[in-house]
Image 1 (tube, one colour):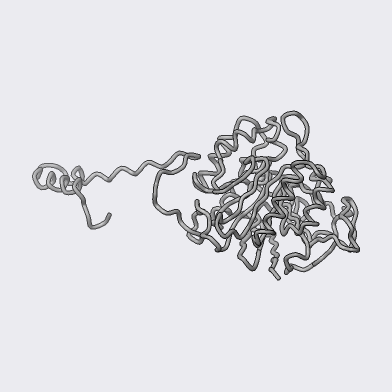
Image 2: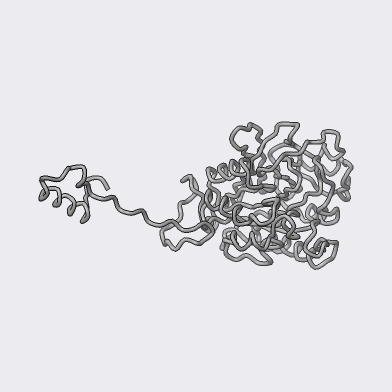
Length: 371
């Protein structure tokens, strides 16, 4: 530090005074050696508290009980320039956690490279929480088990199979949000999708997790998965019609997905007399519960696809019959942008916005308020 030489500095000064014949430049105190940094993916052994939100460094610890929960979410990431730009945005936002919604590398054998890219930007202990996509679920273009090893769960109280089907309340005490991450509609190592059909074990697990959150008066329920159902991109309802209708029926507040490499966010959707159920590849006006950016909790469910984490974008199909369900869209042919969804949840409000990566301008925002 300036103004203090320390023992090594004093010794160097004495040497200079005694050795008059030596050049002054050869008698400067030696700088202290820097402390070693922890390797990417290795938990830090430091006991110093982690920086909190607003410091510009992602927090490695969750929020205190009862306080706001700040999280980001995106899928379809890769290891290229776009992915790094999006991670830089996340680092600048400084959330408590990030939901990575699947499709991580698109290539087998570079799992550690992906993990190093994440931890270099967000820190070794940051909760970069994973759910598998179709590119790593069967091991052909990445292996979800290897990703889980180098980006393990960092949230206390998590239940289930991390990376595939899990749930966690944040904060652990007096939670504000229950996160439920599931994997419908994608193939695993046996070439078959996991069974999320109506009444199946995984269906019941998901439904029970939602019901329990409401019974415990947890303010917000957020479901995340790789595949969407409604989409104006390349894919149809891979998440399953029945499963999607169950989420709407149980008034899940926000459903997040990736898979389609676009950003799309629906109006608040509900099942009521004029909408007995949501039917993909069609539009029923009665399913629209609220069509502005300020919505009331319990009136319906908002679906947001954030498949813009860094890999090549898809076109938005403006003629898709499901288009009237969407409040806003962004894709290769329409307001293109990589970026992340940025969400802050308090006991009274869930406020979300799309934050674009450097070089892009598209934005979106919406708010859910409790009654």
